[in-house]
Image 1: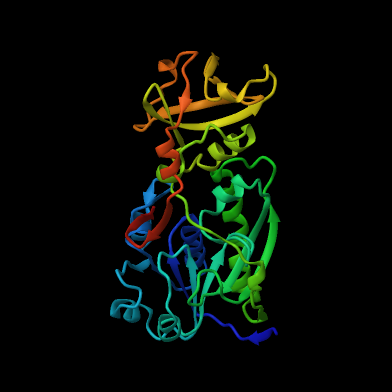
Image 2 (image 1 turned 90 degrees about the vertical axis):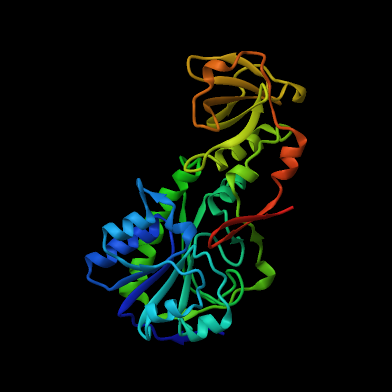
Length: 337
């Protein structure tokens, strides 16, 4: 059953990192709404528009804190009473326990989730979206509870990613614009007339976070459409899907598939059968994979070093290790075999 709740905010506290956090911070400043940031070491060092988050917050003179522990005394003092504060998590690095939600954030902590809930809980949103050929985008604001993306939904909106979106950076641009409009509309217009709706567990699904270096190894036995989607899923702003050619590790971006040339047997998958002016033609079963960007781990272009007849391949142990689960902590990542 839905219930009415009252919202009125005198201050905004954002938790996490990313471009949307930066954009919302500038918007808040422009309207003279007090803004504070709680972030983690991992987010603090990430770069956005040629500035680390640390540099951005310092430059804009935005009050912030980088706690080791979200329940620490320093966080409590930083927040203050927080009675009329809009607390919003934007990819925050912490799992919030019940006592923290109640005693520190006054049962008023929200999370912004970029996919449909209760389906698609978890992380790695853009990459999973591309792997599954998804075009529906979502702005979902929900209460934070002790679970992962399980709290009552406050507000949601749906939009379409244009057909031109192929790689994560394409999705990211649309996501930021749509969710910026959604959040600012909520703060300025909708926060006094909202309802909460419980999530239906029998519709739920969860997808773990991904890391390009660990999870981005190409399995050339996949069909052509899956190979293309996989490479696109780890394209910019990430470092590119990985494989080997002549025993050298390479990263691949900017790909497309075509059936314009002859059909190929699956045994030919990965063979470079022709070089264009600035592209490679690589066999996939019944398709050609066109590669326009191939670099080594140092970011150096290796196009000139590749010869026709060379084969791209990924050793079995690399493919197996790519199935490891990655968990992001406030300090970085850890993996589970």
